[in-house]
Length: 303
Image 1 (cartoon, rainbow, N blue to C red):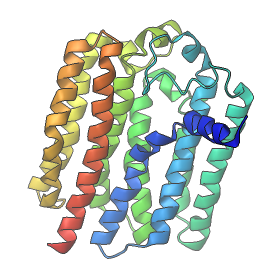
Image 2 (image 1 turned 180 degrees about the vertical axis):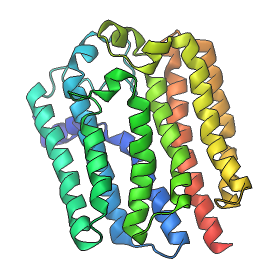
Image 3 (image 1 turned 120 degrees about the vertical axis):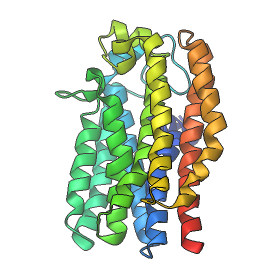
């Protein structure tokens, strides 16, 4: 196999393009630190590397332990149903496990460097991130199989990543960093949730008790609407109360895309292939809102 093909396969296995969603947590936190006068390029690069490698570990371990569900999933999309590299015999099952453990190890090594050189309290963010990330799919906890996937993703991408990165910059915790972590964490959990709609039949057959399986697709539409609404309200209300910069209301620019995602979900919740636009819209609003929050923090710095 050519080297270029090997690299492409591992990019696919890692689902690397989707790292853009999770590393946005580091971008948001770094702009908050920039606003507060604590920015440092080394810390930004380091936090992006920690989050990306941990994300890679989560995805690979997920593919390894999700093999039963992914094998019977006939409604997978570019956004859901795993990377499919095992199912297509492109990469061996055991290699995926080894690579997943290596990816988590890389995240831990980078993190330990900052624990030693910057602040020992960072260890708690690292332990929480790697622990929740590994047991997201792995036994004995298998959070994803117990209807807890969205909560874990919210914690990992929201408070743990944003507050942890901000702590790396400032060596302090702030209410503002916690509040700013909410919308991105909720929307990223929404990405997981919307991807459960096409996977519904396979998840149900393999006893994978995700929220859409527990609630059913019809009722899950309402929870999706609530998640999107809460994500926006988690910025609007604190901004009005002056707990976070008023410039963060710039996220309202993405509301039309969010509305399209909601309408598509309500119309096509039971049609796997027609849910593809809703999946794409959800990822898009998560990325756009991350950028808009970052832009709002930058505006606060200069104006």
